[in-house]
Image 1 (cartoon, helix red, strand yellow):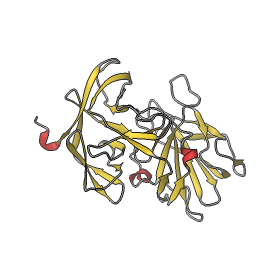
Image 2 (cartoon, rainbow, N blue to C red; image 1 turned 180 degrees about the vertical axis):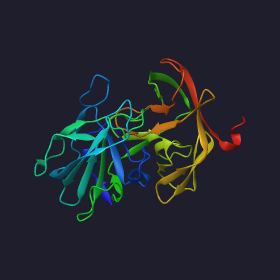
Image 3 (cartoon, helix red, strand yellow; image 1 turned 120 degrees about the vertical axis):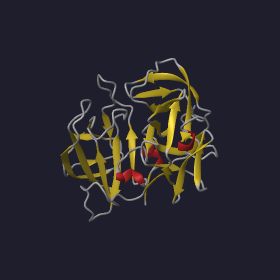
Length: 284
């Protein structure tokens, strides 16, 4: 288990270990770090401050799926932190093998990768390997913990739309209970902290104990192990209309929620109600 220091995590206003379809995130073995420094003309963050200190071991460019909204190549930066090898993805390297960096130094510029779904914002992907492991392969990262307090944020599903994109809606709820003092995340019905893509990615995270996780009165997932949740066959709805899911994360200064909803007809300023419908309620 690798624990990422809380002071390092706090440099990033939004983080998530589970909001991804890729294997390293299935068991919380990687974290996506969202920076708010530097922006391009399309409104995507570009600055890539390093989350680790160490020596650059290798950089590599790889091809990725061809998406009309993204680059057709991505990059890997491997750094030796002394205790482990750190793997950083989605950054066009501004560093070379043999260089040393400290936390906060620029690694280069974030790229909008073809590995991203269209509703995903630019971010740094960080995972760790033991020395001697293959640091280039996608699988094999060590379990990762974040040394930060996370407050549960309750929500009844009602919200105002504050921003929209072609495939998503950003809402003003849930509200952050302690902006700047701790990270916060959406709470389940029993107060567990949630993280992940519900249910558009197979697994997510829930703190606490118990066999199941409920939200808005509906059982949404089943716990396996001490933190991973496998989402059930549920549908997120916005004013009764099916959506693809809820994009969940840990927020430092603000929270809110992103609804993944390709083809939606919602506009900024609309007041909406989000709910979750299980398969046996599909005809309701």
